[in-house]
Amino acid sequence: MCVESDECEIEGCSSSDEVHTLSGSMSPALKSSADLHPCKPGQKFRAALLRCRSPLVAAGILSFGNVLNYMDRYTVAGVLLDIQKHFDVGDSSAGLLQTGNCIFLCDVNIINIMKRKYYYWLLVLSRCLVGIGESSYSSISPTIIGDLFTNNKRTVMLSVFYLAIPLGSGLGYILGSIAKDAGGDWFWALRVSPMLGLIAGTLVLIFVTEPKRGSADHIAGRMQTRTSWLCDMKALAKNRSYVFSSLASAAVSFATGAFGIWIPQYLVRAQVVQKTAVSCTNQPCSSKDSLIFGAITCVTGLLGVVIGAVTTRLCRQKTERADPLVCAVSMLGSAIFICLIFVVAKKSIVGAYICIFIGETLLFLNWAITADILMYVVIPTRRATAVAFQGFTSHLLGDAGSPYLIGLISDSLQQSYATSALWQFLSLGYALMLCPFVIVLGGMFFLATALFFLDDRDKAENQ
Image 1 (cartoon, helix red, strand yellow):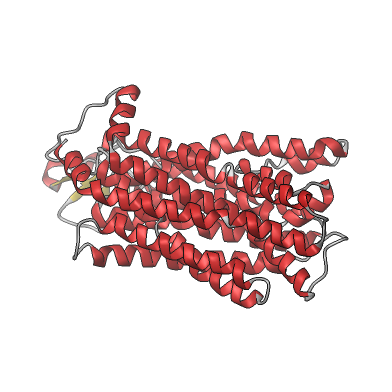
Image 2 (cartoon, rainbow, N blue to C red; image 1 turned 180 degrees about the vertical axis):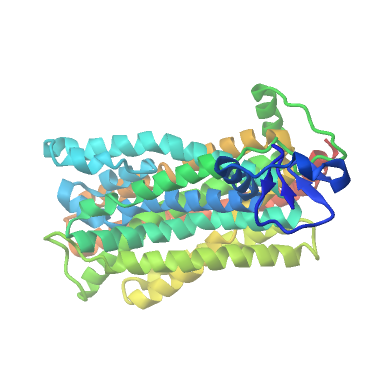
């Protein structure tokens, strides 16, 4: 039979010579069956709930929440052309929408009752406000997973968690496009993910418990003592592997943020130039390119994370610097194919999609590896601060500003010459050419990380 800590018998448990408790196991001789009594329904539910609070369940729920975060963020990108037409805004204003992370459900309801000139700024404000909560979630969740698992298991779980970035982004395009087409208006694209977010939040509250910092890494019951935030920041600033990998992560975030919002738009303008499509004048606009790009992003995200995890594991047999070196090579390779997008897009949309597929796969390859590098070079009690600050710098220097910057450059170039379909296409392409240069810079930062990785890892292990 099975016994819970409140001394009640669980019906349906197999008999055994050993009695299992929440604190361990004991011999039946130490616990008389006369002291047992049937569990009440509430006690059974509590016991079942405790059994479900496993590390694997927690990692799965946190990963599901991360998928929803990025899906919510890129829902707007899937209907960006409609938003531009509805608000009559240029590329820079459309890019500004991506500086936030999520959309309030109330956006849609308020938009319908306010004057049009306030629509756009209300949408921007709500995205920025909700972005605060999402940033907190994205910063804390990896540290919880890092404290629940070690070594290769931790790598696998972090790979699953960071798979949510491309997977959720791709699903955001797909969800936005499908909801818009089904409802006949782009407003419907904003009414799905908030309900899913409520479900994810409820699951986190019920099934995810926060472990002690470094509980999976402590040896012989010895735990590091906590230090002040200022002390942590000083130590992280001296951690060269952490600094360079954080800068490289910001470069990746810059590119993915810009591509996520502008590549579908760029391909639409390319087809107008090729005369295989016409400019959208009446809403709803075609969602074909957003659907295709979303599907590609989902597939490349899965391939990138899997290939990255497998490649790193194999390369670790050859060199202990495998993690940053694999990231550096993938970044440099990605820059080549991303440059080719702007070369072939004017002539062949299919060729552009092929370049996007390969470039994104190589770019997404380093998401989980970067998180694993942090886990190696930062002591457990300092990881929460490290992940939070790395996420802050990645957004600040990366995707928080890159969509707006690309849109601003595109608008500036369009104002320099007479407006035409060809020049709208070329100006956006010229602006996006900034991304490959940033990606190459990120590859250089990963190479710098490789120089100091072993020293910083050994120092963290010794501490």
